[in-house]
Length: 212
Ligand code: SF4
Image 1 (cartoon, rainbow, N blue to C red):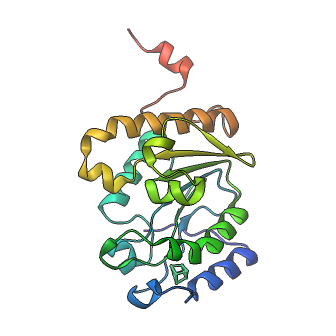
Image 2: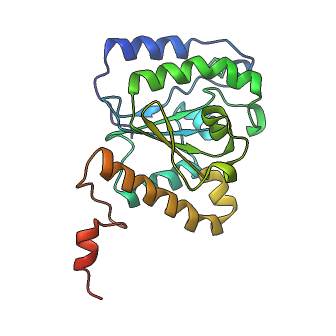
């Protein structure tokens, strides 16, 4: 069940604008617009995927199908929760038919919504889930070319990693995805909260206390 926090008038207006959008043809086949969800009170960490899938389109919430459940598990392992200091978005807000990749024109149509959301949320760290988010936000053509290092844009740190749906198809990639998530934890400790607790990636001084 989604936790709800009071949202500012500006954020409510932004939500209303996006929910009423008909700017591209994706809206015609989708059940509705998936705005995104999380903690809008100054989240320092934002995750961006490609677009809603079937379950997301049905419930009008992001990352709630099997891939979303995996994302929640990864967040939890790293000490994050989607409704506490985290926000989850997609590049396009309406489901592409048959889960196809959104076209460049569709991404372009939805781009003002994404930039408005990011401007409002103003995160310090943005995690890009999959190639579509990487191409759209960083202008880098492939995930492999972007993974493994931070990309700073205007004081915001972007990290590219696998989309959880890809991890479900290729479980062997989970090791690399966890390495990426540890980079996120490190950056979060560096810029947001030096005491951030992660159940599976404790602080260095706690790690050194562990029995050998
Ligand atoms: S995908 Fe984005 S631009 Fe297209 S109709 Fe939905 S909200 Fe509007």
